[in-house]
Length: 566
Image (cartoon, rainbow, N blue to C red; front, side, top):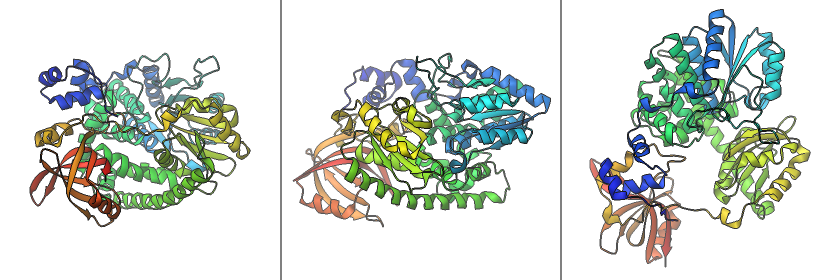
């Protein structure tokens, strides 16, 4: 699919000193108007939105500071994923810096499930906790928070998940003393698409302001808001783009010796990190502890300061846990694909039940199933007393709304348009699958995977200057995808397999005008080489890049999709 959005590309290029190609990419990302374009290209920390615009933000900060003055005990209740861990880290660091008597609890994925529950609340009461502050959870915990209030505790909810709605469409908020969530209908915050870590980060900003602490101390924790944003797969648009862009720049100067140790354990250069590294290398290691052991490990790692002897050992443990998680995921994925192919191939909404799979892997496997079949996918696993599930969606299917349509079958649920988590009784699994499919309004068109091309650009147009300009559009990720270009009828002059794992190909392609160009393809090398040698020509979807080897810099394309002609 070729993007065909219109604008005065030459005018934009002249005004912002960029190429018309880059101007077209900005329009394709729906970045329109001088103000939005300038914010996208040059957005600075000063352009982050005012946290006071968030409903109950000032109320929450005032309550916390009053509790700190009273010297009562405060407990932060987070979540076991990367967003929850970063949120907990930010609030713990922030409240401690303001002088609070603070501790934290992160629910155990298998023992406690998602979010705050009755046993966590009862334990807090027994421990003499006066105030509970949630982060990245709590908005749907209506009964649990009601219990905490009945036990005489103060409760502050900070969250970013969808707010529960009544049958008439009105929102039902938990009976907390303050509820900070940009998805509230009565919240005037300009950008609701932030993660739990950013909500927590904004609360720390207000706490520091009102405590007279230096702004720089708050800015020095920006990398954790960035890690949470990428890790929770939020759209890298608007404020999120600024947070991630500047948060990556802040990474080398982090106060967390644990974070530095993890970057090193993963073999990465902390001065050259991208959103990709956070999403696919660092993030999975932080998540692995919450999946296979306890997320407290990841939080302990992040809280390691200078000269903390545990940093290196904890980083190595998390990396090893992630390797173990990868092997378990592969086995579960193969079972899921077999089930879809043999039993569910006619379903619009895929509901895969893997009773023996580790429940922490359900979301990852659901994502892989969604990628393979381009259908909304739920993966269910058997817990101790119920079945737990996780879903990943496609653009045309609002997953949270779909679950609202079958909530009478569910014990608990929550999520976003693109992802969700839930639990139900085992006897309801088949009814869950059947009703989701009966209620689906998806069409065959929705299942056709679409590759969006920004510009059908001849290889003759590629230059080192253009490649460098495209890098200024980073960070790339959800909502700000890496640009893709295309050209047809390239002749393959030479092709060979490279790489230790037989997963890469280097070839030279030549345009009809005679321009040669090196090209990289990441695929099963032997199969591709055999087919390529027998083909007449190749059409490619690509991204231009620079190959640096032995001090030499040469232009190349990285092929993202292709079609061989025989």
